[in-house]
Amino acid sequence: MSKEIESLKNENSNYINEIEILNVSLKLSNDFKEENENLKLEIDALKKTFSKFSNSSDKLDNLLGLQRCVFDKAGLGYEEMKNIKHFNNFFVKRKNESKITCNHCGT
Image 1 (cartoon, rainbow, N blue to C red):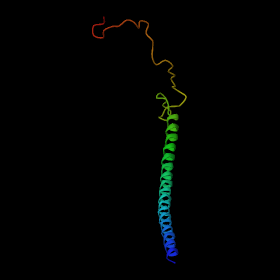
Image 2: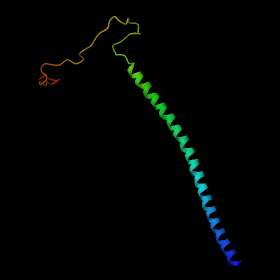
Image 3: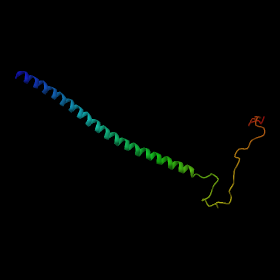
Image 4: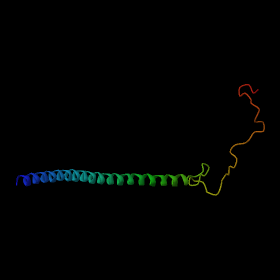
């Protein structure tokens, strides 16, 4: 009987150790589940932020695409098709580019 009691005590202690291991495992599993839920919420928040940024970028591109030329005065009391000046060459190339002159004395 004493041998059987001793073996049952050993078996019981083994089961108690397994139960403790399973409890620790369960606690870790619950912690991971909570962390997973928190990360999902963070991902959703980042997706919303990114979508706002993406929409803002599209709106900025749209606004930049709708810009008018500085010389276009339509809507300011001017008739749109009259007085339109087309400026093809903003910079005029000089013939004597290699010649350097002083602005003070002219030499």
